[in-house]
Image (cartoon, helix red, strand yellow):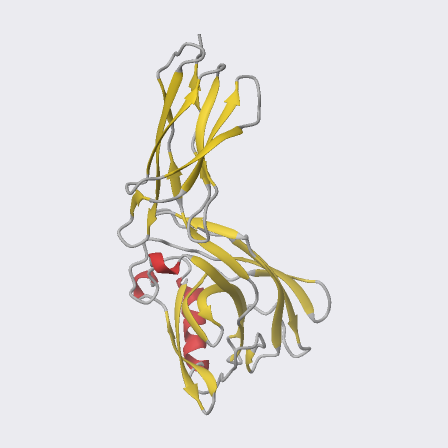
Length: 295
């Protein structure tokens, strides 16, 4: 599910003014849940859900959320959907029956501020909850991020890589009451990276110079291709045959095309690779080790 939130100032507060789902998803298996959520958000948005930048829940359903847990970092490529798991605690009033089929809840993530969320993304299905007391439950759901989504309001953009924030929603379909809470945590949504390494010549005489080349590329969410990542520090590492640990030999930077080229002395049989630590916008990655036989 992908949701778009646009907000407007109302009497000094901030109110949700429009949230919608792309019609392209109407026929798939999660359409019922997504349709319910879209309807709930649309009905409760204009003027009825004024809120400030705090993380307090908005709405007329006596439900709040806490303990929002999601992966610290999520990497998204150019094709496959990514579905990180989210867990959270749900606290509700005695008048709320979370076991009723009409009760729906689910996690979401969004860019921007709580009072001005952008590109809200959620799951294809509602979360499942297990009661832990008469008024609390632990819930587990997924965020489904599709880099191929083309809707203008929900398409991933390269500029949106970085910090996203957590939110959660609960809705009683029968009574048409809802609770929506922003500012529940954060995660890094990062562009996937690919790194290669090739050491030559192979085999090589001990003491001779090896040339190691490679390239660092990262996903472009807008054209769905991988492009060179320039100016990035990348470590050249070596693992001796029979060892399980890599040792860093030096750090080099990618050129304007994302390419790498450096040298090392051949001392023993082993594996050479490049390793990139990642940034707030791009995932960490290490190349597969290239084995060199030293004569």
